[in-house]
Image (tube, rainbow, N blue to C red; front, top):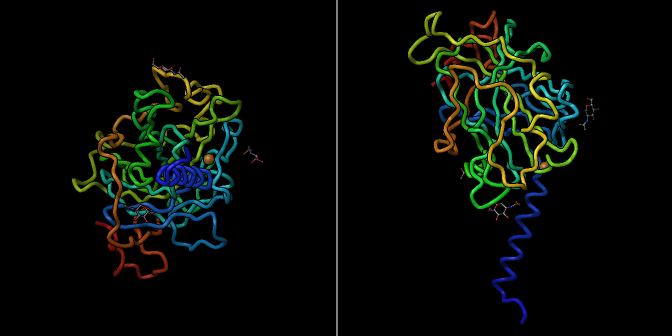
Length: 311
Ligand SMILES: *[C@@H]1O[C@H](CO)[C@@H](O)[C@H](O)[C@H]1NC(C)=O
Ligand SMILES: *[C@@H]1O[C@H](CO)[C@@H](O)[C@H](O)[C@H]1NC(C)=O
Ligand SMILES: *[C@@H]1O[C@H](CO)[C@@H](O)[C@H](O)[C@H]1NC(C)=O
Ligand SMILES: [Cu+2]
């Protein structure tokens, strides 16, 4: 009996979806949204990105990954040949930041991780030497494997990310000391992790200018001061059970790689992960005069626009 028209249609749809997944096999951060305002990330597919983007540049024009064999190579810090963004996202301690990935393929299951490293330069993170950055983990996504019910490979943090329109919410710790930070956000895809050197890290970096929380700067004793974390080249080991793993077997547990989440940081619960909508464009800021005065990029007398985008 020939297949019915609807069966053919269903099959065509499956093929199309598969093709889409292959075509978008890799990704990058398109933009971030804070309090409804959108800040443009780095686009590896165009030759000249504008100066006022908040995402670090990379040479990963294939939207590719960094393999475990390169975990001690500086490429693991902020992706291949990464260079600091000049602009920073203005954000308050305690605010949530929404990362918008440029799609994510279903097959690429794995955990989602986020880290912060402070920058002490007079220009914030704009000219920081990435090898000096000391990262503390602020998000490890509970803890990668969400459920095995229904059998392997199970549902992972990446499945929650996809269900949220390829986006991920991160909370900036409420007691975080104000200043400039590099946010290192990463998906660890485990679909080939059962093969030698098969895990795929997709690190991306964004500059933040963190202002005091609405409640004001915490007192010295309650303040979260980062900087005694780990260089990104020391975060992971190729043989770690969270990296060298077969997700197509029934797993009873998953051990997320890297350090533990720093005290004072709280990952946004899976149930609270949601897509974010923007209501307009934010104004990225430059940091001048030793981390005190943010001003709009391209403005020398930044007073008028200084507060724009800071809600
Ligand atoms: C690992 O890093 C080196 C040096 O940057 C680079 O040449 C090589 O292509 C990287 N290997 C992979 C598989 O990405
Ligand atoms: C999902 O993200 C895309 C890409 O940024 C955006 O264009 C689209 O409006 C979003 N869709 C929904 C339903 O929010
Ligand atoms: C996983 O466990 C289920 C339930 O016990 C079983 O039916 C299935 O065959 C197992 N799958 C694998 C790949 O071991
Ligand atoms: Cu891929």
